[in-house]
Amino acid sequence: MPQSMTTSQRFHGWLSDHPDEQILRWIFRSIVAVTVAALAADLATGQGWISAPDPASSLTETRQASPGLDLPAPSILAPWLPGGDKRLAPLPQPDGAMAKPMTFELVGGGKLMATGTITPGISEAFAAEIGKRGDYIKTVVLNSPGGSVTDALAMGRLIRERKFATEVEAGKYCASSCPLVFAGGVERRAGDKAAIGVHQVAAISSASAAPRDEMDVAQRISARCQRYLGDMGINLQVWVHAMETPHDKLFVFKRDELTSLNIVTAAPVAGPAPAAPAPALPAPKIRS
Image 1 (cartoon, rainbow, N blue to C red):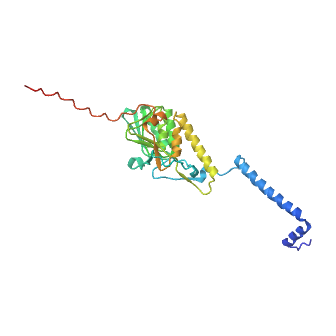
Image 2 (cartoon, one colour; image 1 turned 180 degrees about the vertical axis):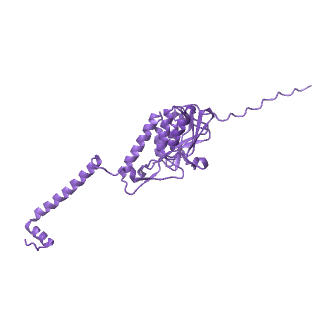
Image 3 (cartoon, rainbow, N blue to C red; image 1 turned 180 degrees about the horizontal axis):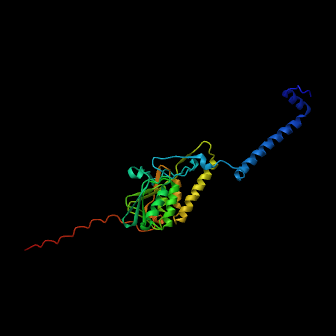
């Protein structure tokens, strides 16, 4: 063909030289080739032969007014609660010291008072406190609305390593990720009307996060927490209650559940002793 031919003229010339059957065969082979290439790329990503975006990086953590666990859980795992569970309590709204980063104070009886929110990085401050005063500490006393699950796990494992007991005093509470810290105690005690409760993680996913990526993240979080609770001797039904409870509610364990699920391992901590009744006065003698 002359070199001055346009692309359109060349294409029409090619069509005139090829029967319809060959053209259709060429189109079919092209489609098959593209399909095979797409399937091969998907398989390579799934098998880890080529890198894929980290699913965890595509999820954005939601900060609640009252902090919850700091690892994301996918929206596709919203709890299926039958008709509303009357067991669920409103999530405590911390204020004052409870809303601030957790502080540590060593008091009499070898008790380290741990009060406030488990903020990211607080486990390092806890480890430093243990490094300075560990020889005097026997029990870590918790009063916390929870917070960072990563730090809670680290604190709980350090407590177990040092063989400390844990305690929630009468009328105090340990919520959200705080029970993970509590679980680290070699002996675990709770006072009268002490509230120990759990709920699911709160997070939202970015628009680019695929459902299968969200599921992968959720499975890894679940495996990590379940492995920890199992190591601490806690019945894994505790984690089931957490995953079934909305992040704006709290599943508070009853006294018998604290014992049956092995959350509490020691006798309840006695509260203030009731005032002794006044001694009975002798009956007056009646003279005849």
